[in-house]
Length: 297
Length: 257
Image (cartoon, rainbow over the protein chains, first blue to last red):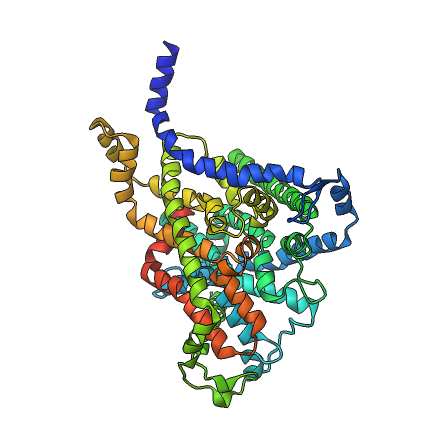
């Protein structure tokens, strides 16, 4: 009786267990190639292992090594610096551009342009950047005299990687912000205008506060982008000069696959995973607190 | 507002410059080598002829094969998963978790797993771990939520099985969204850089591995580099230009909530 009632309740809620089987291939792929490997890292982190020879168990040696590995901690610092420059720029640009193009005739064309770098062949983009901005013979330094010395100066190299990342990813931010803008009901803005607010006041006091959840969402996306900036680093600077652009992900890659210390690479993987989870936890707490604040008002 | 417009204009120029350069550099004649001797810039097709000897075509073939297989699997599996979630399966949490994981976390463990499966340095290494994509599941689920569910209920009353419903009812309705999602999935896999370098050797180099190696080995041959970069970018450029409107719509509506 209760089972039947439960079945009916589920059917009313649109729950169809027979359709669940269709998720099986994807679920199997996620478990086999993401979840299980992530858990297995715990075991690999206890190995000394070059990737081609048989692994040797070394207990907690790799994990202890994490604590006194200066290169690891300085790469954490580089990652944080990267995020501290890239995130505010990413949010500001997404917001400013989405607001500026709202309702323009060129809106669609601008969005198409800004979204393009994230899709086109990344190796080709890296070549274009190299030929344009190389301090020694790039087109922009030759034509304008403006040189960003990213091959020799640490600060310039980090900035260069940040600029490339912004070049690639800001289009996503603009699209997401612009979608949220369109979700704001017109009546809300008109009501503010009827109350005597000027256009810039409507924007500052009505529209931008309503975009807060979107900006928080973009912060989370931006954090993931910062944590996986190692591809841009590999393409542009290979961690140099003097290790100044060696972000966590790149250090992981270098250790495991250029110095062939995969066991220690697994330990670094655990370190990066811990950082990721910590950041995700903090962001979830901020989200929850915001939710509570909104519920109480 | 004026400031925001100026920022927008400046940023658009910043974004456009490398794209314009990509289109132009391919046609620089070989005399303009080594230094930017701007007087010698001109128009030439010789760079494209020189590409033959570089192995670009082979790399394009590998990339097309691997990415094509991956996109087909991701769409099929992703649609199944999205449909199951739309029908009440609690799997969205897992999908969002996977979406938020930085990709470098899987490099070491996948290397071990593929080694155990004897897939290292095979085309399987480029395909098998990518059979399902959390982004594809997420975008298709958002699209499914806009489908009027009476259509599915009606098909059920007619006695259609779940597979038939997905195949014959849902998939045709979602065709525009699936096309756009396919282009995004194509770009994501096509643009992998370090993963293919780690898991395969030269015979199976993808376009990205090839391009980074070309830049490393011949950094002064601008025309050749430009031509290689342009040819390698063409497939995605064509796909993007053809489906740009749809891609942007699907992406925007995917993140509206």
